[in-house]
Image (cartoon, rainbow, N blue to C red; front, side, top):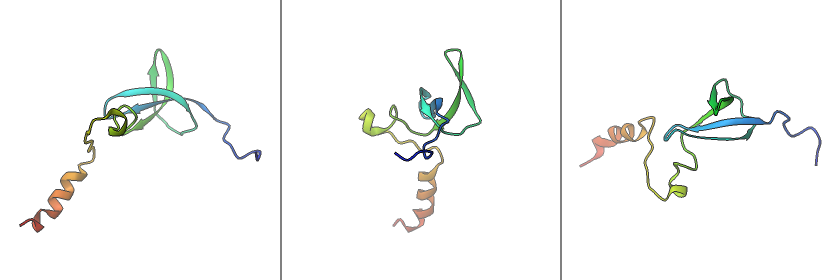
Length: 83
């Protein structure tokens, strides 16, 4: 393997699924300014919209997560073409 191409700053990071508040810890090099306390220890926090606990493929449930209102914007935009 080539030397010097892999990051050296791996650390334990908390990833939080914002749709269901699930938190899991793993090693990562992701940059973040936020922190989260888990079991009395403070970790860097990375927020996600979807994870293994909320994704329909893993849960077997079809669940719509629309945090930005994209579906409503689409429906309003194309409502004038409806007959």
